[in-house]
Length: 159
Image 1 (cartoon, rainbow, N blue to C red):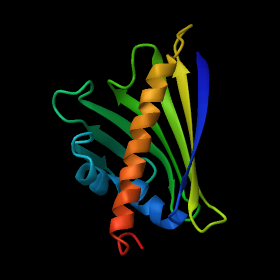
Image 2 (image 1 turned 180 degrees about the vertical axis):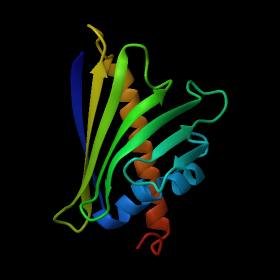
Image 3 (image 1 turned 180 degrees about the horizontal axis):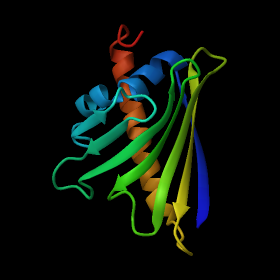
Image 4 (image 1 turned 90 degrees about the horizontal axis):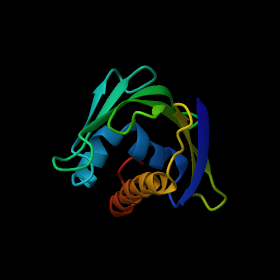
């Protein structure tokens, strides 16, 4: 087994508390409303914190039907979120699992910096394709930008 790790950083004009609440804590409610063409629904088994299982259901006719992940950590004080993709079409035969470590930090301008570290645990000599990883990153960034647009249009939301 080999592990390939990528870290992505994005800035936001919103403070960590607000963007974390919208994009992480309440993602199961907000994101399907903002982007129904990308995510049909998100089902939560548990309270949403550590040990909870989340199933992301995609619209009919797409490449994937659903993926399932386990929440490893959700800390609203440190704005950290860790989870592991455990089931679904997102895990091809040559991937054992994918882990994600998300952290939001205050930036000097009053906004925030999000850091996402993704670790892909491959089986055997399997090599990840750059275009597949790039496509995944672009989808996540599009969702993040949709949440930011919502917060900009709704100043009272998640304040």
